[in-house]
Image 1 (cartoon, rainbow, N blue to C red):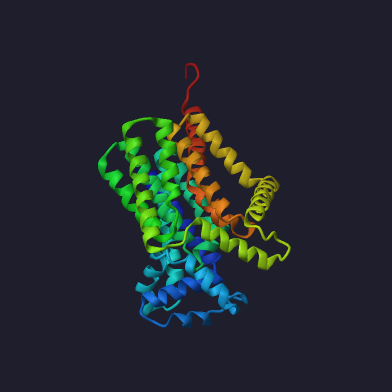
Image 2: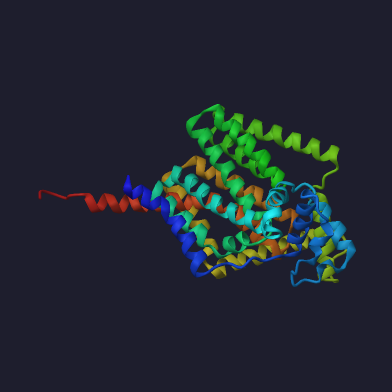
Length: 362
């Protein structure tokens, strides 16, 4: 029991040590300014005051940019609303506070998720690694929805796992509720949908079918609400990315279809080369695949396959290298860590078995 407690506090110790020894300063981007505007509106303050935030970017000098991008954020209501609750006490720092709280939640939700596959020690190591990851720490100190999205997406996956393993309606209800909350933060409805479809295809049982049906109904409801409310979708986001890409590179093709084919191929090639050159991204994926194969865990395989399919859609809607770490690397992290947890669990079990095995008479 004591060992389990000690393992469980390792991620917390990691986060505290990093906060003290290598604190991450708060960072603001043009996206963060738009979230600050939404936060001020929710707090019944003057939204334009957010343009006083210093980002080191001249991006907002163009009124066209302000109007075109701000519309894309109208369906991301949860993050600025949470910030507005803290704004009277923390000012603009409220958005950073939400991200940092989400960082702690994400680390321990991933701990609970991986523990269901690889055991507590493996989960502790994975959660500590997540807490120390430079990308995660950077986003945890940014005024962006991404860290809250990671925490909620991990919670959705945990609800799926609990529903499949415990076969109870309460976890299906939790999955539905968390999917709704996730979608209010970012339009990521296709992540739960593809994850549950993959689980249903692989497992083929009543609980899996039920989760997939619930996810499909939620996706249908989201589509109807978006249509009625006139909310932006993937096509509009892609149009804006194309417009912005042409401003950064005047030689970019004027045809959005031709530009998309070139941009998507470029992102795929560039990121594949980077994964091989840097070693660890490819090693993590291979390690996760090896862990899933070693344990023959069909549920872990389905979650990874569903996450990869959803990430492909995410990159297709935003085929640019400058946001690849946020659109691909971060959402894939929970499913990859499940596979890594399985691998670590298998290694730890094998080592402890050899340590306590007695060959022949003593």
